[in-house]
Image 1 (spheres, one colour):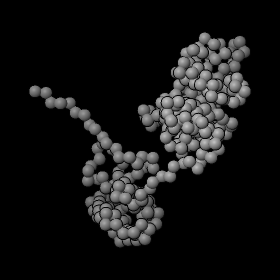
Image 2: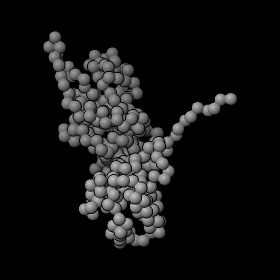
Image 3: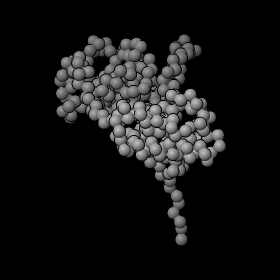
Image 4: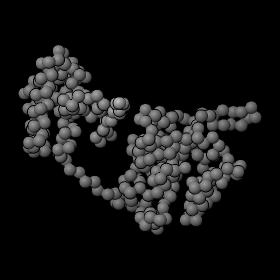
Length: 304
């Protein structure tokens, strides 16, 4: 049920199995849970008490991983927010209608997901990063009480250590969060973010450049305040000065060549057809998409 080093989330799984272990899970119970529910779930198919849990599981489960297209991910998150609807059969039995029971997820579930009805999570293997473990496990129990089951790998010394020190680790796991290394104002950072920050600063600090149609009003001296602000905050940088001068010259040139220049025309989005001379105007549309993208175009080979 769980992808390797991933998470399985049950939005609405019944909780009546918990009393079987008295509300607690010791090592033996946890192994039994792992064997019966994850490795060999087909073994319970003949058990009438659990048969409904795996019936039509394909239609009641979805995936949240990098293999799924972004528009489908949004549709999945929207479906997760839907409240269960019930219907009554002719015999008077109540059933859940079009319910989503299981979500198979990678570490993308650790941030940006706030679904109040997620209440059970299965963590398959201890993540390498403690912050990721905390973030991912906090996706459940946000509104109602929830359970998080961590399945440690007995062949990993690190997982065995967390298992042997389970209580003490979870009572103080915030102090084990690894510090992040940050190197601000690197050349790569300047190249990726300068255009976005520069245009945002201009539009928010100069009234004549606020609206979309105001891009044509830009004058080179308007950038002096931005350059002074950055220099005072981060110090001088010849690489920054060269890129900023190129932006200023390019903006001025476009204003002269294009009548009624707008920001919609000036700023560019990443695409397969981007002109190399326009790459300077690529802007960030999301703080999640910071990696460099490479596009390939496959053409038929000429035949003799």
